[in-house]
Length: 252
Image 1 (tube, rainbow, N blue to C red):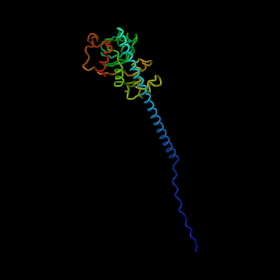
Image 2 (image 1 turned 180 degrees about the vertical axis):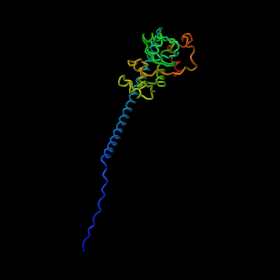
Image 3 (image 1 turned 90 degrees about the vertical axis):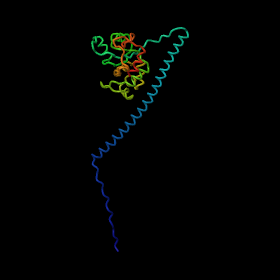
Image 4 (image 1 turned 90 degrees about the horizontal axis):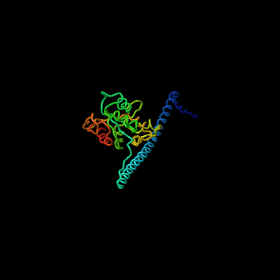
């Protein structure tokens, strides 16, 4: 008997993948890996910034509480000695335009332009010094102003805050809006940094105040009393000192 040999069936060869397709797939995988790496890095940076911002906010809050307690202590000490305590002069003012453009003198118009008060009910933060006080006196019949407290500064920035970016009015929706423009140059990276810089009139106040778009406020609830009269005469224009805070509650 003769042995019969059976041939094994040959394995089918897989079709070769074009080199261009392999390159494209490799490129796509590389892109996905790079995108994932970038997202993880961004998430780590965001988490770090959140921790930093929380620490800064706590530090500022402690600073405000200490300053307030110091004022109370000095006032009580003066009262116990039968004296009067006179607090330091205000360094921060909030200025609101209350009248339009009719019959505005050139000098007054220039002051309002320098203050960026181009529309009725626009408001800005101003650092008080000899020059700005003189400018406020020039434009006094067209503006009302006073000394905002911490609550007013915080409410204005949180509720009505817009910033300038590429000549556009951008709402402050998160801390990144402030960080991308102010962190490297001025070490201001969150809203609380901005509030602190404005309220304490810090070294970078000029840049922080300029970065904020002029606040667009509502007409106060109940309307104005009499724009042509000074505040001390029962009207609206002029310096109303700390009473500006009650006005802001009606306008924000």
